[in-house]
Length: 392
Image (cartoon, rainbow, N blue to C red; front, top):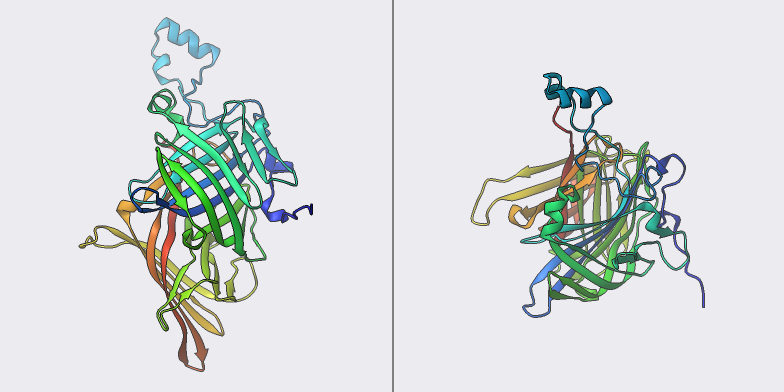
């Protein structure tokens, strides 16, 4: 049997200095339909590793309460002196763990996190990208064409360990996938890298979310896979992706199309588009000149409730690309990620998977614009986030 060749950018990247100060994250998104009701939901699975060499044998979560007391502090406390009230009571640390995050990016969405000591990670094999767990019965794996696993967090777990930074619930999955559209080269910045090797991915299988079964079908999965790694997070975070395209010009479903927007990288975004096999790419780290404006704003409440609005407009010498996406706030929630540098810094990302909008592409002809494609996009994953610093 032929051995599959796995691209380098899909593999585990925490080597050298990044083992002690770095992160690696695989992101997987797919849609599924409730087997009983037919309701469509968007699901997220992430494999996240941070600073594995700092504490190989034990999970270190930065938001776990830790007393910071010197010997003299303890003496003051035992004596009941005033100095005891002024001593620092919390110690900030760098996190070190492997985590699998699973959740739903839809109405009533939530996330569940399962943590593992870094020494339970397995990688570098030819038949899978990353595997974690096993000792507790929670085994999660990602290969070149499949992922399976389970995450379960109880209310009792959260009461005992609020530092888990998630909600109570359970999710298990068994999914096969085929990556249909990828973009190269990757983004490479000073402290952050991004690889979009599954911008359009078809998934098949099933997901069990809080006891409800969801069926994942290839033609309606609208799947997406990418990867971020490096020394630190970008902030702010601005992300869109979709592969549910319908041409407004001719009404046809576009089965070989997708879009991915990622950043913010030095005030720029990488915008990667494929329209029926024709790629239009704007890479934030390349010398190709283009101007870009982007916003994420809250719209006034209307009959559809409160909505957020993502806008992106790109101009270069040959063309103009405009993207407008709306997502209901009620179908979004905030995900938390501990920053590699520690100090109780949190990357907080507001995200949802029910965005809808429009993508337009124009060619520049002297001083005029010629509309090349006008696309209705749906099932858009919409995200915006920033790093939150601890109170001083």
